[in-house]
Length: 466
Ligand SMILES: [Zn+2]
Ligand SMILES: [Zn+2]
Image 1 (cartoon, protein in one colour):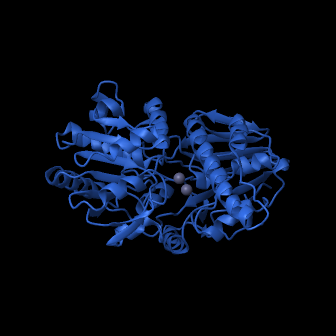
Image 2 (image 1 turned 90 degrees about the vertical axis):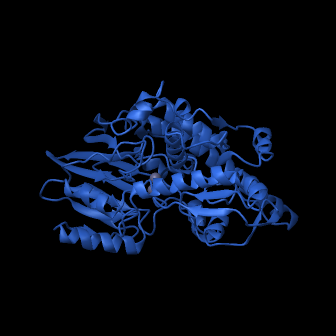
């Protein structure tokens, strides 16, 4: 009998990791970073609860670090087998793991400066750029919808999850002693209202389903309302004359925002002279999105299809890439008419801090918050109405208008999750809820029970048989 052990994302949404043991094979599904408070993130440094050398293959649903970010540590600790994912995920993973390694090395260096002064022992970074590069060598990009036998008796198939470029729902069929069992792992399921990507694919057959439950307790605001609000802010800012700052997450959200700005441009609403994408990582990601346009959701987006090459650039001709520090600094001299998209998404680091310093004190400036802001971050302080903000080494008065747009989620809302699971044929798969806060999982469990589905909320280190 094949067995599955829950080794991550059982408590909150980060650190996804599941161990599948089938016959003589050990397959790790996801190898994500734990993200959150400092103490929680220390878990990333602990040894894996299995021998990395004993793993035969890794399967990855998508590139986000909470699903992929511990892979270089796994490789460093002795895993030498193949890592299966979709082809676009391979390319995004290169950007994400190198950035993650860079940040780990930088943080360790800062910490070590302090430690050297106080005579303490130095620490090692979680992993280095070289570890990330070795990991990328082991990556194996697959096409959507094509089954592949990754190990004898174990068949893998990725179908589109519509969450970020390359994201997949993972289907694994295990043939043992003449019988086949199918495990479906939802990965992160996309929001079908999002503009660029396709809707998550519906599957009909599974024995066991692992279902993400990030928004298990609520539905999103309708996208139309969010877009109306976005349009109004752009109009208001055109009239008042100041710059618009959008702190953005580099992968996924940024490309959606650029697409919507392109739509406004095509509709004649956007009069701004330039939209600056001021983040090397977001630029690199946007270029990968360009290369994989064939996976975009063209059915609903005829305007984008009709744009000459169908690229974001022809769609939004005022888009400017700002790659170097000098280019980024030059934007600081612009006092009105610019839209500046820069990371980090919660304003905890990155180039957005300089733009905040140069714009927050201006009464005609606007800041648009398009993603979740964790407690304690500068982004959260702005959302909560702070009158002053310490940013880039200076205390700045907040005179700009702060807007929050809540509808741009990359995750399925509650009803979308229920709709997705309702398509499975009877007997309904045994369902396990993961990747969600406790409250979200409890509420979703109640809803699924009403549909007659057997649902459990596994604890860390629970093992089930398939
Ligand atoms: Zn994700
Ligand atoms: Zn996730």
